[in-house]
Length: 209
Image 1 (cartoon, helix red, strand yellow):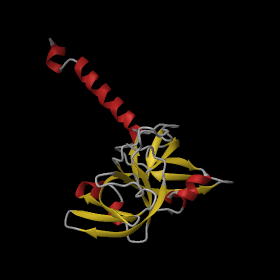
Image 2: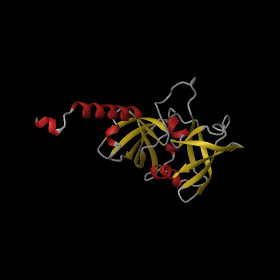
Image 3: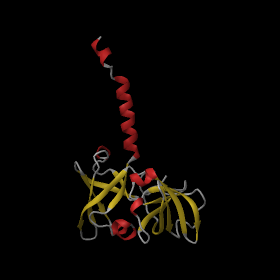
Image 4: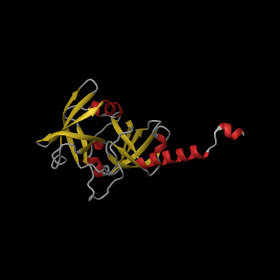
């Protein structure tokens, strides 16, 4: 589990594409300082398992499903990425519950600079729209953010100076893709309510009796 607090900006050093998978290598001295084989590191919000590490870099396998659902497949050597190690039990919970299981991708639609911050507007996939609420939590490329407002097909977030300086969201432009992970609590609530509703609603034959 992660919290959406980016620890380090890493650099992609290689992306080897296979027929239905890829091998991604990222340079990140901080997140690899205590890395072990099998450790979890989030790359732009995607939880990946370390298969090799050394000299300040790590390699992870990226499966077809991950390539399909996320923007990792478009990365190229030299690209910067947001990195976060899995949360330790003794750590402060700085963001919100982030699984590293990306629900879909969006694109940056607009950026509105403020005095010291920016409001960023992003497209909103229709299947994810029910999970976003004003002042709720959303993970964008691994960054825990608060939703400013939500429309039918778009939403916006505000980026403070620290986020602009220490994550890739400070340099991404209009049209760039980003990974989205909605609040897992919203998905659990939906599932629980749907199950309870189905259990308490009589079927049509019972209703006719």
